[in-house]
Image 1 (tube, each protein chain N blue to C red):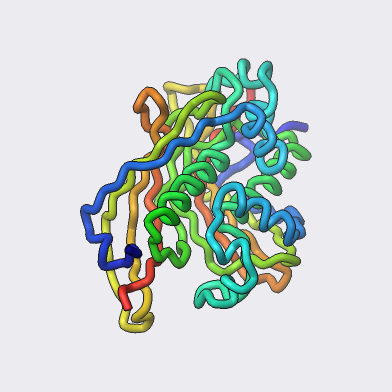
Image 2 (cartoon, rainbow over the protein chains, first blue to last red):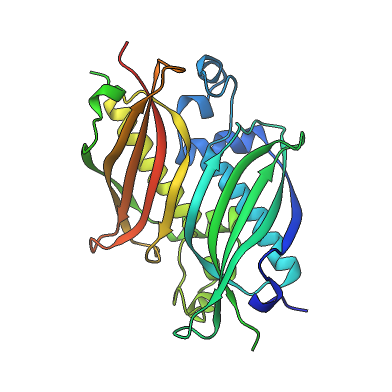
Length: 149
Length: 149
């Protein structure tokens, strides 16, 4: 049972994913892509008024959310064809090592285009929450999904 | 010579960075965070109407842009304090292995808040371009920078 554009109407909601944030992974991601001191070093993070202690790069949080999304799509065989971008990406609270993240998603808009009849275009809001059910990240993505043949 | 909020007025422009996109890194990032077939496998990518051949995850492109930005900030000693999020993130063209990326940034807005007198708030548009000077990604970020003491 594959999931096509037609199976994801406006208002469709989904709750899924579990990602245990590992300290080693936080530091490795930051070292590669966001080597700001508060993502790498306990002392520098303690001195930051924003973070207070070692926190994941926001880009790492976005990447972890993408991994949960792709795993979920894969399990459901969602006919994803990529994304054009985001209307919003907001980091609401720091993400710390040992946090456990999950996602809640809702389809906000759905449209088709006569120019690209095989593709449906969805606007999907996804919120990442931590183990205290606090939202840590919110995004609104413009996603392409295959239409039912 | 550190760079504070006061040194980054509206209209300030900057051009910087050089990132050679490696095939191994494209696949490793996708395997960890965005394991969709068109980011992992040549045949699946060839079948994608969007990508045509193996292409980097958009989140990897964003991460590579962040790395160039942090390296640039670090070299200039910009007093970055993190970012609240983005108003827009658009993937304009696929990024392929062996592409060479660079960034162009412009300050769109600058404001202070009486509640947080040590922090200046900037809205910065950053465009990533490939070796053909084609824009591949555009983002507008809300960045916090320390004010001059």
